[in-house]
Image 1: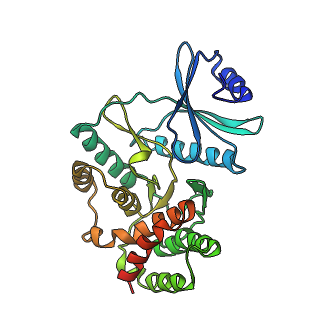
Image 2: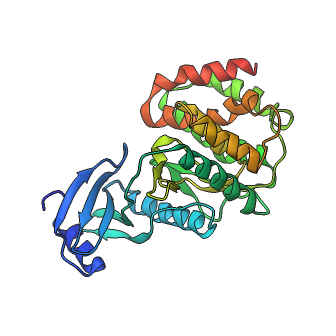
Length: 290
């Protein structure tokens, strides 16, 4: 039982109203520790962290999961509890039993994401609270235009962090500002859509019903092409997914030509989380828009 602090174990047993019969270490990403907890009647997924911001990270993660779940377009794990115990923050979720991906899964996923985007909008781009992408702060102050939101709430905070750390320099700042001046012409106008915000292959699960279960969101009402662009960044999804999405809620022509503009945000996040190995990819995109 030493796989979790005793205080966390006691809190989980209190929340679940049952003793833990087993605790297993499982994959939980790059930031958090993760455990599979089993009682006599249920299995749960536990995330833990001792970073100063970890309780707020788990609180906003829970809010994001709830927003997605309320859409009724796509599944997420059930939120059981988040809190702290003796200095360790934790998030307790229902455990999702996994299945193997089939073509039906990709069809369901493409359709569900399209419906999430199409049927869940807002008057402004943003969110009523800040949240996180990974362990980095993500600002969500409301903006009336997508380009203003993307510049002010997405790129500029990441650029400032990268400049302060020495990963990027003033030459990069000039290159970004040249791109900013082109965004109104390059990006199509769209209504704000509820987006997952960090949609790569590590942030969805395959449910037993061959439906996607979204995890680790960084939600906001943003341009829906952000989710599609992120999905392409590290290898992409099945073409079936993209075909069904397009059939359900078509993108404007030219998405693949502008996809790298959205990917800049995620690459900048990786620069700030993992260091300079992602700088060259940023440089290549900026060079395209000189």
